[in-house]
Length: 459
Image (cartoon, rainbow, N blue to C red; front, side, top):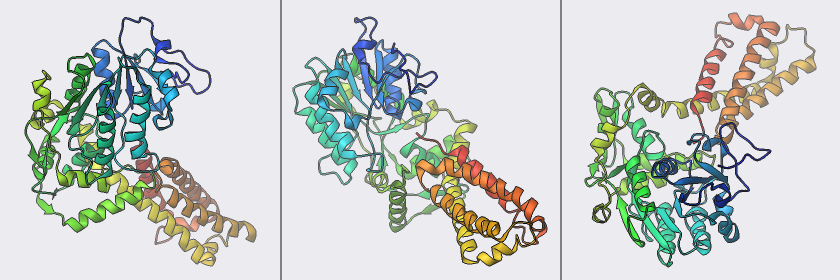
């Protein structure tokens, strides 16, 4: 087990930034698996499957906090994978028997660089890898060098780099991954399926194949045990495909929701506009599954051929219907699905409310100051409160749009709104009986900010 470092420690999570897998091993006869992106949706499932298969598991990632969600048996090396050079890889790989590369990103953004994650990482890893090391690359069904998205194109180049080496490698290409945890496309499916009374009808001719997260993780463990030969490239997927509108409808029924009152076909121009807006939000740190890459992938369809995998002795993956039956469908899932679009809508409303309120105060400072005219405050204090409050309103309205600052901004809105309520009761109590209710209307904004603070979390 990894020892605790001084400094950046987290309860229940071992930090092993300066340790190698060999340092962590108590018994050398236990094979060691290194999982890159170990706390991600796929990486976490792989960690659990490898532990169940008798491996000692070491995860690699950036966030000690995210690593806390994994079993205590998983040790950790906390690194930004895009910055690890060849020499450091040699140190990290010392004593490792299997590397599972579950690191990836859908689209370039403030925290994601597709070239660095999908290509450069493979270049450095393979340059440092010893001959005996088995490398299991988790790619994606449909990757191609001439793909229509940078995600598929960079994934394909990473696969090609690995395939040109004489190392002990296996490339697994899953279709659309479904899991109890909802991220990315699977979260989008749930949110779209739970729209009240409406079912969006998108891409009626598009076919999609899926894979249960456990089937993919078991395939990784199967390959890690050496049960498939080196040089294997195989799709991991169910055998049949489902048309996308049927996929969404089945998810709705799985959630236990009533049949939609109407099905709305969205024009392609609207879908593209949504994607562009999501791309802009991506620059603010939001990894929305509505970005153009995800929408393009879904529009093109996600198809795979599992025959190669099954021909090598791999277990067949369960069908989409069987996957839904095996996933929990409880109040938690329905609540998440219903709030999926409500939370970003609340963020937009709060941003607009606070920015506009600040701008109005700056545009009509005298009117704002008149409310405090009967107080005992000096003129300087009154104008300081008017302009200071207006600027604070605008800054909070802007800050909540940034993923990194969303929760702190929501809490700031709550604190400032409470201060306004208390200050108004002391300095301008007549505002409470104003027919337009300016003070009363602050209370719903507090509730909305609290919902955002509770509903937004980092993956």
